[in-house]
Length: 302
Image 1 (cartoon, rainbow, N blue to C red):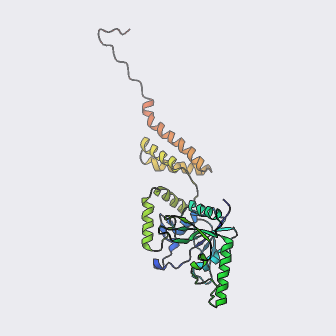
Image 2: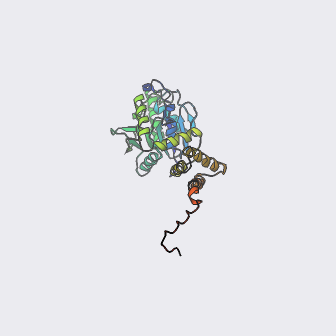
Image 3: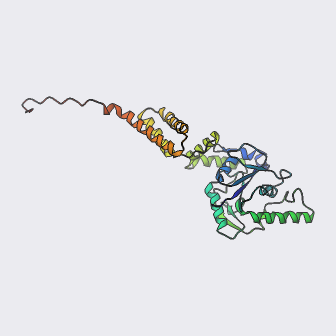
């Protein structure tokens, strides 16, 4: 896919959360901001408009002047650091955003003559902070808005401070992509609770857990979890239950020592699984054959 940039708006006041640090709130073991960053990890440049903080991957930091100037001012500050022809604009509170969603938005934009492609939520409402835009179109309209504010004498800061987002989207030609899941954002504590419950209930809870662990440990290795689960089962069944976690740990450690990736993990897992199977077969494979029964009286043994 052609290169794209990302601007993540993460500097809001979160008033409906009582002023909590919303980007740092954890859902499924990961900060909301880190979940969003994981969904756009292949972006050429990722700009986060907020005060700097630890993140799961390197980003470029920006801040509107004055801070807290609203989404248009934040977007303008972030755009100064982008160079790709297309830019994905995201809020930092999207727990179910996925790489496929980002690709879908970019595809919808590039296959149309629109200025942008945005998600709509379960109620059909536009979500302009889950969208892909043509960078030139954003620069054009933001410049026009700032100029109009200057002429009217209402300009503050860079001329975009305090302006509502609809002033921008109303001037753009947009195409829409319905997605009630990826568009779900967390504005209240009830939303946070709903997101956490969904993470634990849906069929990908194991994937969520592994992603959280990898983020916490600072690793990016993608492995076939099915291979490791099969190994854990074989070790537990053929050796002893505590052998399951210890064996998978040793396989991972050995792969790391060898400087290998997913292929090395799979190779070593197969070796360990074969060892576990052989372990349980030792008692039967080396057993002495039973002695032949004595012939019954009156029968010919010869």
